[in-house]
Image (cartoon, rainbow, N blue to C red; front, side):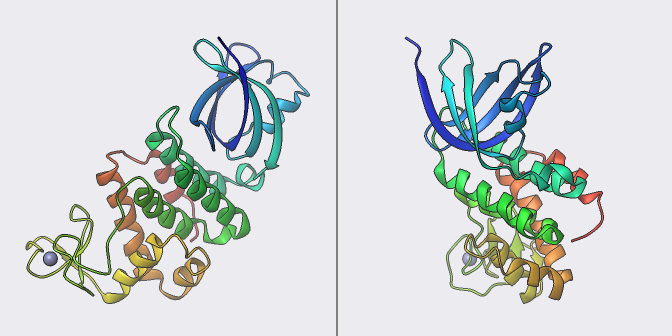
Length: 249
Ligand SMILES: [Zn+2]
């Protein structure tokens, strides 16, 4: 028996379907990731269509369907319109939703992941000039939420208290001299601190300062964040290349 439900969340992606319809992927508070069809939304003047844009935070009414749920009503919570109006912001937000879309499991509730995504998108809207550092931070924070927290306070393998300065992607953070192999990279304390900041979910506001005042440490920590996510979450971040190709922080 099919029925209707109401939920709230973020539009991850949309795809065209036929002449006038669209398929949308949503990450919802109650239902987790849901794929739904929005009918007639590509006709001019469709109010639902205008609200169901990628990165938008929405309140939706859906009807359970046999294969895909059907969108019935959409109210905007946050348009996040700036993220669709600027190429660099669009690229940054795309990295975030691409990662979330990849790790979220359909029908499985994941509030921490949704919260992290909302915080990441909000940070981009609030301070567009810091898009690059926000994306790098988002990568480590999302990885942490899905079970791969980067460890910098202690050795990621034996838990010997830090600080350590051997930074390992595969090892999951910093390693002590005993645990680190010869191939483990020795970095400045500043880089370890930058990785710690990127990974700390409470620290969105400290990131622009990091990017401005310690650009080298931030850049090294950013490359580490990308490698970390690609290794532990086993996926290539295609949108990240588009972001790297645009100038600025
Ligand atoms: Zn160790």
